[in-house]
Image 1 (tube, rainbow, N blue to C red):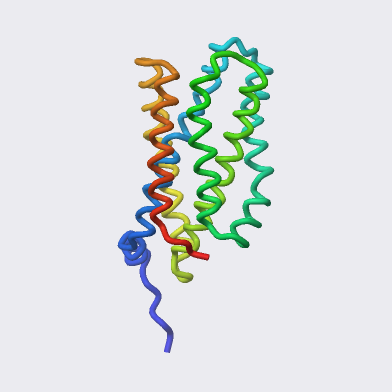
Image 2: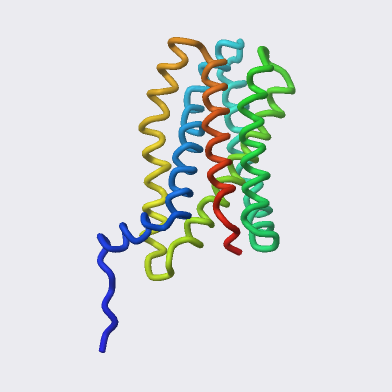
Length: 197
């Protein structure tokens, strides 16, 4: 006799009834609020006097380091657990937001912080998606990862207009402070989730 398969409607509410999945969903939302605001970062670099080539290099630096760190993250996740990577990635990402406040000009320091930004972002994203898979029952794993991804997309819908409003009213330093707050909330919520290894 075939085993009944739960409907997508049932799967959705089953996942949302899980405390740890809800924490992860909200943590990803706050991380995304900070992450997506950086689509406006080229305007800040332009204000610092960067030309289009320098802007491209500085933006690409974070993307490149975020990609290159992921094989290492996968190894650490499997060997040492998720929480260690959450701490490393979350702390690096949070520190990045603070350090931008103390970089009022172009220079090697800004390049270094962009590297750290990419490392933090790459580490967190890899770990967060791993947790989403861990916290979704095997029969609902695809749906669980998809549902988890909604929080990241929704954060962009909120984060970019919010960032624009903050910049227009208070400038980029206020955005960095707000991003630090969002990053801190995300890291705190992540650390409430028990190890899943």
